[in-house]
Amino acid sequence: MPSRTRFRLPAVALLVPGYVLLFLSVVAPVLVVLVLALFDYDPLLGTADFVALDNFGRVLSSEEFRRALVNTAVYMLLTVPVTLAAAMLVALGIHSVSWGGTFWRNVYFLPVASTMAAMAVAWRWLFYADTGVIDATVGRLLGLEDWLHSTTLALPAVAVVGTWENVGFAVVMFLAGLAGVPPHLVEAARLDGAGAWSRFWHVTWPALGPAVVFTLIITTRNALKVFDQVRVMTEGGPVSSSTTLSYLLWERGIRFLDVGGGSVVTLALLVLILALTAIQLATVGARWERAGTR
Image (tube, rainbow, N blue to C red; front, side):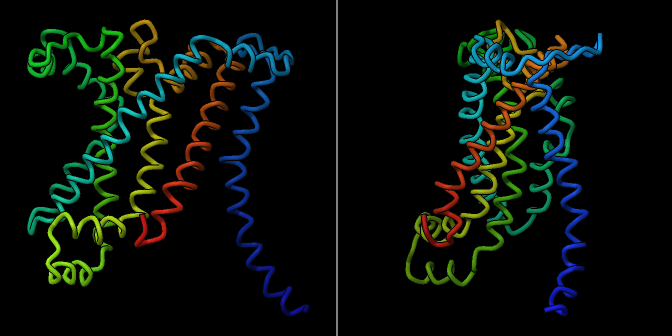
């Protein structure tokens, strides 16, 4: 028994720095936000009055929070399915070419490596009324104009940018998954007379399960915490039609110095992300992580 204890101690000691880093970078900030949500804190005066759950009732029952929650859900529904579908098509195309695959992979990954705030400035110019490229082309074709100043088009315009940003990341993930598909299974299916769609559905798609699950979770998380393009392109408008939870968090906590209210929005966003991640892992993840099942 003493010898076994002697061998276990170094392993425990090696884990201590990781646990300390995890506590300082994840647990401690959440605890600080939770404490701030219980106080009416004024950073200018340096006062902090304990208000218990008043901040939660005030924020969670407000119309602006409900609107931000709905806008965030709509943004997620507009971006996540389109991102996954487009990335899958692009990844299959790149994977099938015999040359230039690395070039195209880097091209599609550029938006991920770029600063989103800077890219959003360029996209805002593209969406300018009348003079913008999108208004002058797609807008005239579909009869849709002045996207960023429309209460119905502002959020879809932001969703276009979000999809453009996340497709590159999803493409790289799917390409990694495609590289792990056993070639002998694909060849066996081809020899059995299976067509392209049949080979994809019965061989490639099940093998992509882990990559799809991981990409779905990360893309959903990115959609729920969208901020940069909203701040640069619409500033939450017009009439709060594109205000998301992350933007409401910044607006309350930074612009209006409502630290307690901003902390409540932060906790709500955290709970939403954790809940959706758990649901995805328990449903889609539980089925697709087992390779060969759907």
